[in-house]
Amino acid sequence: MNRTKTLFILIIFLGTALSCCKDDDDERIEPKKFPHFSCIINGNQFFHANGNWLCPSQTFYYYPNGYLDAPPGLVSIDGGDCSNFDQIGIGLYNFQVTLDTIRMNSPANVDSCIAFFIGTTTDGNPIRFDEIMTGILKFDQFSDKNGDINGIVSGTFEFTVHNSEIDSTIEITDGKFQYIIDYEWY
Figure 1 (cartoon, rainbow, N blue to C red):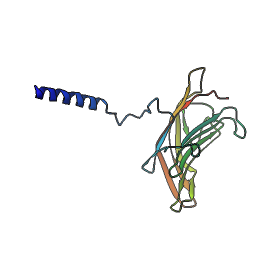
Figure 2 (figure 1 turned 60 degrees about the vertical axis):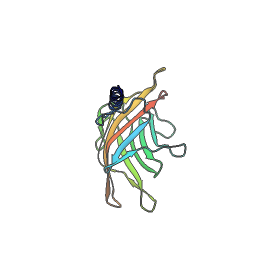
Figure 3 (figure 1 turned 90 degrees about the vertical axis):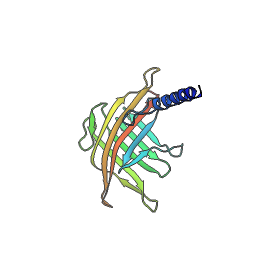
Figure 4 (figure 1 turned 120 degrees about the horizontal axis):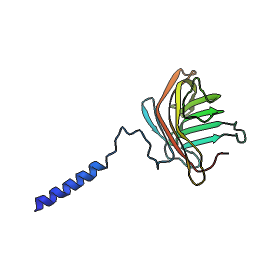
């Protein structure tokens, strides 16, 4: 009887443990994980570190009609690691909303595109990589709040940027972002 009881508990435990496993190949971001910004920088995982009001770790802005000094159609997507102040950003100017792939070197549906990585040197000084060599950005969803229903902006990106002063290149791959939009764009 003791063996049966032990075997039953073992089967329950293994069944529970195995049913909880997450498929590592699942590329989707969990729907309740807002905001999200991650990528791989030169082969190293980058995930926004905890931020606070002094250092926001991820931001998204879109101004379809401009705002203050921001021109119409400005899109800004940023992620930062507040522990070391590394930052990754993408900016689109005069963006015409599309879910098509945007090629950063010859963008369609935008007037221009910027992409950058800001890291720190060994002596703690910031260093900027912003000369785009290649890059793509793809929005999967792009909507603002509609009545009581929040909007979502999500997508993927990758790009390679260069710094001519030090003749060095940074490769950003497997980029993913997702933001909940709880306001209407103006």
